[in-house]
Length: 370
Image 1 (spheres, rainbow, N blue to C red):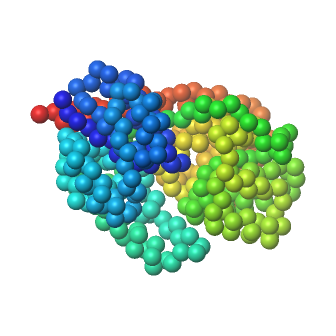
Image 2 (spheres, rainbow, N blue to C red):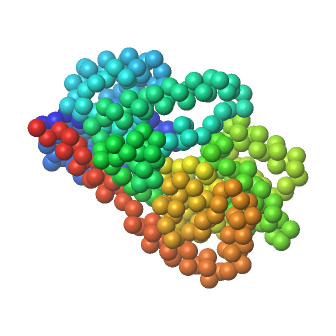
Image 3 (cartoon, helix red, strand yellow):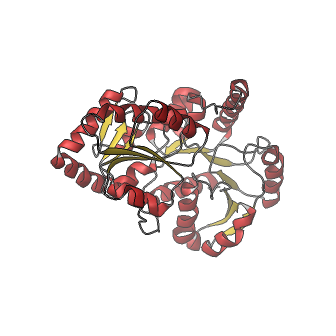
């Protein structure tokens, strides 16, 4: 019996859904009759919560935050004490001292491919962080028994950047979309309005300014149309909001953080979900919009054509005019909007968390086989 440790320390963050579905599906469908014994590392303050949910997995608290010296040394010592036969690092950041058998999930190459310097951050400091992450990834690519990526695009991108010699050990394990376990919650200020909707962070690679530029092009013909931008406010969002107000662009609403229930309502009632992103590892909101029966208009960059398929409209993320033209098609052609909703419903149903976890567990089996 192999002891497999799952490093899911970011399970409670906004990007933790992958870890949540991984451990839940292992617990429910694999661990009960598995040849393996599983341990999951989670933040100390949620051990009881996750141990209650994961009755077939041992849940252990780990106080070691990512991108810290504590991760490099404290987590290393903790792993040695656990004596695993295999560690699954569900994010690239991990102790460089750890040389035991491991597999790693690399979600995207955004930090390397793009600069996301906070307005108040030194560019030189960011460059150092970028260099450190690049160096870490090179170590991970070399020593990991296997690498998991959420899309084929990311798999190929890793091959282009680090060398095609690694492609044989990189496994594409497509993620999925889902409706959160929360009832739709109305946003009263926007009830009854026609609007476009985006949800996500505001780092420069998300290209939110292009959404605003395209929306401005539409205002003369659609003066009652609104643009709703949801996501935790930070310096990037505040900067874009100030620019939008200074330019006098009306009907653009910066919602800040919204709950899953509010997101469900906003998606379900939007004329379209729009994203102009330059870089994604997967982009779950695309599938969430399809599940909520909302047309999708997406950038043609990175993995997005792979995730959207033929169930949405694509545009060049450098062109506000192309985005505006695709929005016009949706607003002026209800038959097209209905067709995209039907295609989206079928397309989203083709993604499966259970299939993704089965693929991961198959690699565990192969890697730990004597």
